[in-house]
Each structure stands twice: as structure tokens, then as C-alpha cells.
Amino acid sequence: MSAFSKVMVAVDGSPNAAHALDVAAQVAIASSADLIVVHAVGLLEEQSVHDISVEDRVDEIENQVDEWCQPLRDANVEHTVEVVPGSPVPALLLAASRAGADLLVVGSRGVGGHGGRQLGSTSQGLVQESEVPVLVVPSPA
Image: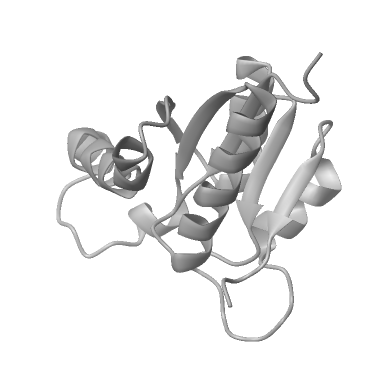
């Protein structure tokens, strides 16, 4: 029996999230697990410079997430993509629960992060609130 059956990875377009996506793919392959790529549409999209609402830009956001998944397609890694509404921590936790994910993978800092070695607010919130293991992937070397 595999250690994990459903691995969920959070992406936001940052280099850390791209590294987390790679690690999540490796874990999913090694465990013969389903890989679910999720992006929480929240604060960053709401504060964007676009003149139209997030709801009117769903296709654009989904296309962006699809671009972030290109390395998975290049490596023939099967995966599904979800774009979920809400602030990252609660939205990702709800998505993981709904999907039955048994591992949540996230980069240590995302696009909203500041420099330094501390965990970002999303990774820290997930570690504190998740009911399933959370793998926080450090910045790529």
C-alpha cells in the first residue's frame, strides 16, 4: 500500500511554488498517487490592476494555472487542476478536504512573500491548521 493516494500541491506562479510542484510530482509518482494542482483565487487577484472582477477573469486565471503546469505535461505526469475561490489557507484546506488529499505540498514562500528564511503566511497557516500532513518545500538552491 502506498503512503499517499492523493497529493495536492498549491501553486501561485512563484519560483518556490514551481519547485513545490516538482517535488509534489515526484512524491505522487513514487506513491502512485493522484496529483491535484490547486490555486486559490484570493487576495492577490483581488488587488490586481485589472479593471474587471475575478469572477469575470476565471478563464484567464485558469489559463495561467495551466501554464504553471506545463512542466508536468512535458514530463507526462498525469494531474488535475483546480482553481478555488477564497483566501489561500481556508480555500486550500477546503479543497484538500473535498478531494480527500492525504498530503498537501506547498512552497515555503509564494508571490506575496518577502525575503528572509521565515515561512510564508500560507505555508505557516497550512502547517498549523491542516488535518493532513503538509510538506513545506524550501526555496530552490
